[in-house]
Amino acid sequence: LSFPCPTFSVTSWVDGPPLRERRLALITTAGLHLRHDRPFQPDPNDSYRIIPGDVSANDLVMSHMAASFDRSGFQRDWNVIFPLDRIREMAQEGIIGSLADFHYSVSTAHQAEGFQSLAREIAALLKKDGVNAVLLLPV
Image 1 (tube, rainbow, N blue to C red):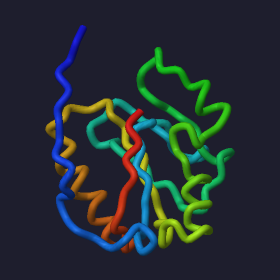
Image 2: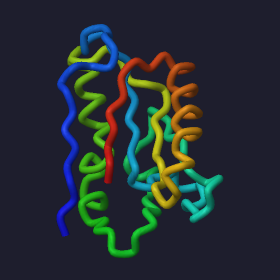
Image 3: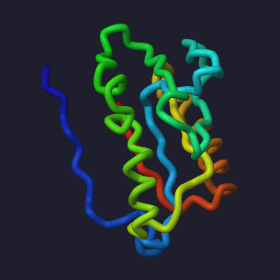
Image 4: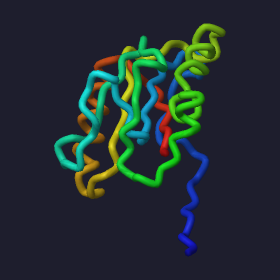
């Protein structure tokens, strides 16, 4: 199978401050959630989890819906799909301004039509947290 690959211009949608002044959040589609949260369900109302910025690797589990999904990379090093340790290092070194208080994990087991309202909901939470940059981590 071959799928068409879209091309995008290199022009930013919006201008913003330099990276060293950005407040960054991570958003992953890996189906990550806190160990004490319930796993993602194939329910349109169960679309994302909030991950605190001070989370540690042992606090997260993956409930990605695809049974054939290879979880071995995540099990060895969570930074493969959720590079919070690397981003923390970048903040400490002054490469980025700061990290968001919260990050987000999205379940992709839903119809595309439902993602617009989900995106608006998460965008409002990001804005409340003062985030002006997001690293999207599709899995």
